[in-house]
Image (cartoon, rainbow, N blue to C red; front, top):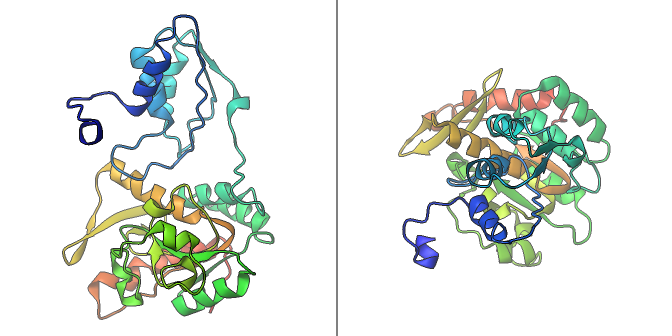
Length: 306
């Protein structure tokens, strides 16, 4: 607000600001919010809990009708939901939970699979993958050239495909993937196969920031050492200077995991995941940064392209 509207000291959250507009009505008003889970990828972004917090803090005269299933990990609204339950005007209804994603016309189980994968719920992830594998191909490989060929072989006609990577995937540069390259989403998503700036060329990888809210038919997801499987969970890392640093801030950990949620849910028809093998002579690309993640993905049932 200060930068764009010249309003210094603006302290309201986006939900609080929007609700305040409708709160000016003297008789009644209705606000319908469709809020996705696990989509917060940048500092200052918040999910459904920000709406609940705004209602609790400043709008005591509103009735709330919400889903009671907001305790799942991608919503992270458990604390706010506890406060909501204490309000007499809060009505919880499971019918308000939109559990089925319609992003992919081939498989409605993709979101459930990605959620279980990122929550390290192996049994649920295996079950979800088994349900979607026949209709929504997912493969994993250690060879980027094979990943690109897999994409080209599966795409038909004008179906759009492209490479994606986390904005913190700094050590993919040896594979000619430099996420610091400024990708123009207009050219990347709309230009044809003859244009080197288009996603079809499989040269420039779009990050979660360019991809959020947009889709491809087929995606090559490039998985770097920023998010590493540890055997029971994830470790979170940011490359600074000449080495990886642990991400200790819990919000930043959430943003990184959500970044991979965005990457893994961009494809409508299928995807291949490239996990580098690492390089023994390069301490920033040790195989221990990548092997556990690759083994975890294959353990979920993903076929290996080799």
